[in-house]
Length: 130
Image (cartoon, rainbow, N blue to C red; front, top):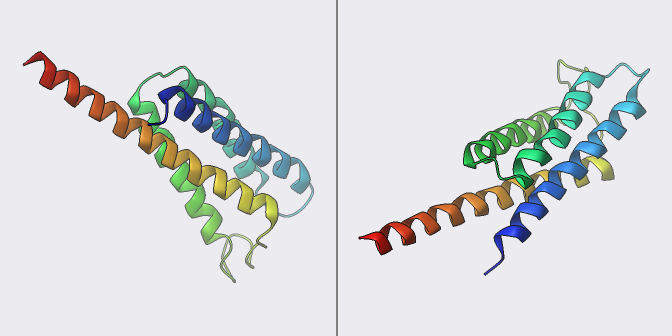
């Protein structure tokens, strides 16, 4: 069984790296006709989200992190369709974008594993008390 510390630090690393990559994309797109604010908010949010994950602020933070990350994945997916109203054309799929999506999916999986492990631990402790 994987150590909870490994899950925590791996999830923290995934969201931190994805946030840094989002900020690098924001700096690359300044001056182009793209919504740079989305990259800035996503990057800052993901970098911040490292803190509640590695400091174990609680499972509600994991749930909110999962939800926010799912929203980012949905935005990325929608913006890849042709003729979208946001940009008038689908954005290209590139290696940085795919890397960010892989990291975000890994973050979701790792957080889900932490939540599941927390539930199992509570069930075991509850059974032992009775």
